[in-house]
Image (cartoon, rainbow, N blue to C red; front, side, top):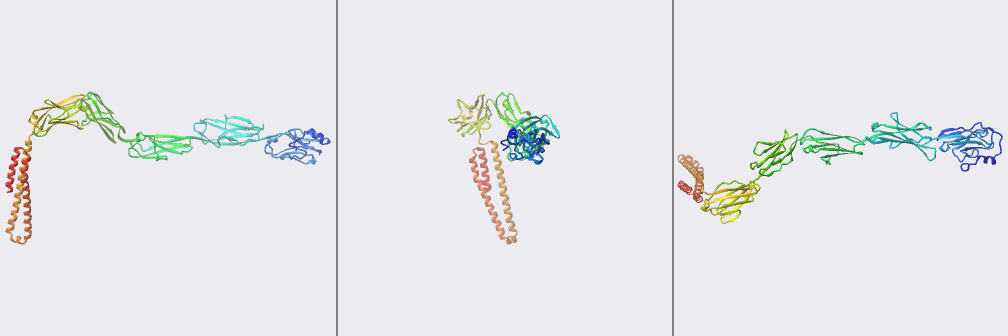
Length: 599
């Protein structure tokens, strides 16, 4: 076919066609520029010529005469009898960009070469990342726009707000067909030269599309959440309700709220509001709100100005120091508003310090005792903490120097020892005997430790007169020294005279009361009898009633007599109980008097 096997012009003319009379072109094809996709007609008119006409494309025949079956888009049109042999191309393509000739074979004529230039508009420009280009706040903007497959290469401009942006960089790339080109333009904008929501246009044009093609992108500046945390009300008294509100602006939008207090997540809260009854911990442990969007998180925290009473921050410790050393107590409180600290010794109104530290220089044993660290938050509350100061020194013994015991009975003498540190050794000594613990003959030593100190007891069984003449030594030792107390034993009377006199007076008063009661009862009984005898009518009318009254009086008399008899019976027992001779005589006297009264 002519498409696949075009014949050279001279060969075709020499061997196939007879010569024609001289002819001339009245129309020849002209150079044309056409946009791809449009139709075009290349004219060729040879009046009076009736031979074969060939169309040549880049030196190759397209077909014989009007048969261009190898080129479906090509058609020879015009009146053949008038010598019109126009070449019509439907929908011009890039492959039609060539040099065309019209040849009259028998006349051995050819038209002048006509250049058909095909223009190809660029494809629609594309901005990488469009139609919305997102970038992080503070980052520069780099936009890339490419317009491909254009002939000639497209020119690209950038437009914002109707103004052309300068400074873009361009590059062109020739495609494999050697005709079309692709253009790439890159626009750089600094962070200060861009705003979110702005629209930037990429416009590509060439001769095929003088008005150009354009596309645009919208700038979307993304940022981490911008957060504000409000706390209401402030200041607030401990135990009241506080509302935290976490307001955030974010692009992209917020995806998560997370709350924490003092670094610990509050799982039960997930929105932008947190309500809670505050305590003292909110003063020192901030509440934080963390807001998250796809770019990351922003965390903001706030402390609450909570008013609260004193709370112990550093608890003072009781001290045990050596005699003559310094004692330093440390007591720290927290409170809001600011608090006042006072150190005092228990039982004394003297302020020793208004600082956290209380320093006692060269302590003496009388400095030992309880000390109080007191803190006051004005109009809110107060608190205090007590500590002890123990002074290490030699033991001190405080006991009654004369103690009593009954002859013939078991007797005890006690020795009370205060000692810090506790005594290493306690010993009782008398005559040639020394006893620290256990039993030796009639003597037994027992030691008991109490909160106040140590009590050592020397017990003697069956007190003899010589025991009242003996001097007893109680001695205690520790690492700081020793102390001794001399104790004597004195014989104890059965009962002190004051007690005897008291018992006697009490017994006498009881006897007088008893006699008065008996006398009053007897008088009342006799009066009732006389009244009955003087009023016989009443006696007769109320016989049964009086009889009952007599029975009641008789019963009361019997009860009284029983009580008195019991008293009479037990009186001798008092004599057996008390061994004192004087008291015995008093009790015997009262006993006899009571028996006489009963009789």
